[in-house]
Length: 196
Image 1: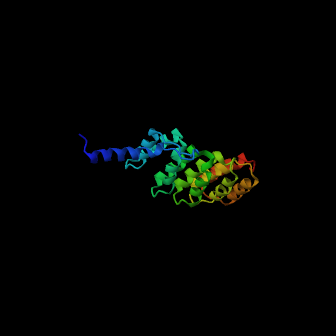
Image 2 (image 1 turned 135 degrees about the vertical axis):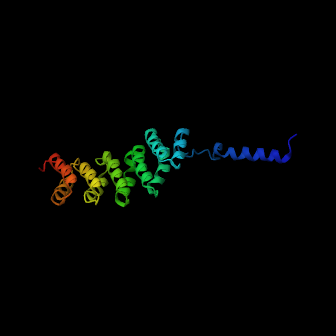
């Protein structure tokens, strides 16, 4: 025999499960958010673990899955306090969203205090520099970054641009650069653009 309160609980549980299946009364189709696969959900949960290797693998696997529905979850990590998560999220977002990620990547390049995140932002933006004109000015500014590794990455990306302002910025950097390793990369870049 079922007690009346048990019957109410079953109805409540059933009612809570049904709203996603309801159809609007006017018959208009509503846009539903893309579903995240079970694999991607599992990987997103692994990002919040304390194991850094598991987090790194989760980001790399999300990057390989390239599910657009995961992009909003990954964007949250762009401003995380942990440098590792910001760095991994930059790379994953670029792989998942492609050219649509450029504004977020450029913001990380310009505002992040971590050289690792700025470096990864440059590398992530590189494939889209020809498609997005707004990418070049922040990269030109990165030629003056205080960290040599960031300047090296910026030199490499800027030297592949055919814009006249890219050549001018590289020439100016050539006159001012003092760091030996950066200067070596700059010399190769100057030869590539025909300035040496």
